[in-house]
Length: 595
Image 1 (cartoon, rainbow, N blue to C red):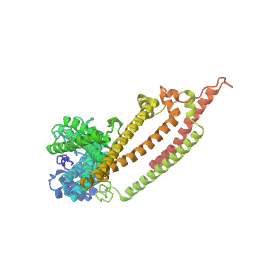
Image 2 (cartoon, one colour):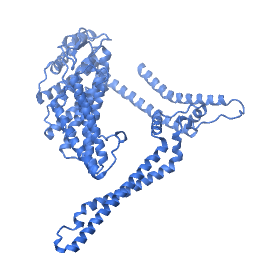
Image 3 (cartoon, one colour):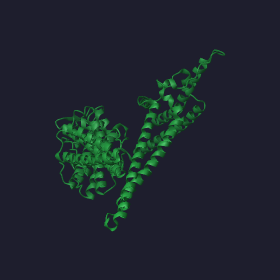
Image 4 (tube, rainbow, N blue to C red):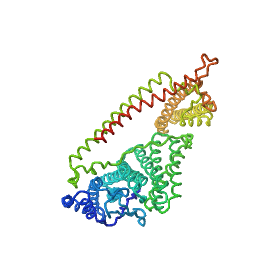
């Protein structure tokens, strides 16, 4: 089913950096020579951690990849402690002569050198995601254990790229200076979607191998396609659009089309079981068209992926020919237009693995002597207090806002003022829906649809009557010949030969009765709602909105002043409501800063 071709990310390459000497010189100058001597072991440990994580070449076997993950995680935790204690940044008095150089993972001829710990952290997190993707690709997905390993590793890779983006590390690296494209938040977001797509693809292989129903397989396949579509959209937008090799982009594009088509194919299998032949034909055509379009744009993709796509296309073509033949000879259903079909349902079974726990450096002891533990604990307690105050004030603001909305609704404000001023408008989404109805003929167009339902019901009834008459005629002739020829008439009983047909006929009769009852309910609802729906014929639709007319005669001439004062009161009330909570937070922060 799904192609075994997946993508892994190559690690970024870095130049060797001497961490020991610059950091020791900074400690000696900013603290004391004794503190520098005390931190000597910690400095050696950081130097060795970087060498193990950055300067050691990666090897293809799974055990060495696991070791690289452990080394990268250990160095990432150490960098968290280095960042808090050493000002390694271009916009600050940075540690003397310490600069990090990293090459782009996708265009290795491009590199950046900056005295920025954020660049170092971002590159390490990128490599962590890359190694997780290599672990996933190395797993044997022909076994249950291999599929679980690959799926988990792809989710961990997605978690690394998600952390790179969500924690702000990528943004800080970009802010520190001109960095390579692979470390931008846009690239991290794209790689996260790509890794999730491949994790979901592993899950799809598992559910198909387990013989799960076509409807479930379709939902899983559709979500694979959604993830690939999101990754492809990111690849086509700046700054990534000119950065990646065309074969890479073509791979993602073809994968997106493949799994959309695969979802259509498996959805059509479920439709066939339910004898929804017309929809089956429509879904198969949609999927095949998507595959055909993607194949035209696919350049340089791997042969196994093309083979998988061609096999899927062949299966869909076979099923389409069978379904069309059955529809033309038996079902005679009208094939719906592609635009009238709803979106295929999707089920996401994977998510980015959170790396917060494995990257937590709170239990690390490196450089603990440089900053007293008591100060660190006090800062942590203060941070918790700030978070609690913010949370409490946000809850109060939400409650007060809700009470205000209820009270304004009771007084029909501010809608009454807008209606009086003639500034009433409708939401853009609702307006688009109204315009779509008007383009389709408006409420009057429903009558044509109802008439079509009546005609189809009449044709179906006529076909049923003709079929019943043919069965009755066949049964009468069988009885006549059985009487005429006696034991010489050896053909099986008519009721036996036509049992399956009669059962199908009874099923169709029941379905038609249900359909007729449903049509009657729809027609009744349309007739009851028609007076209300007639408003949809108004053009522009805003002309149908109610408005309050100004009084013919002014009583005291100050109506405009009253409305203006009421509007001002509304604005001030909302401003003061938010201001109370903002003032409380401001006072708290000032107090904390003073202390």
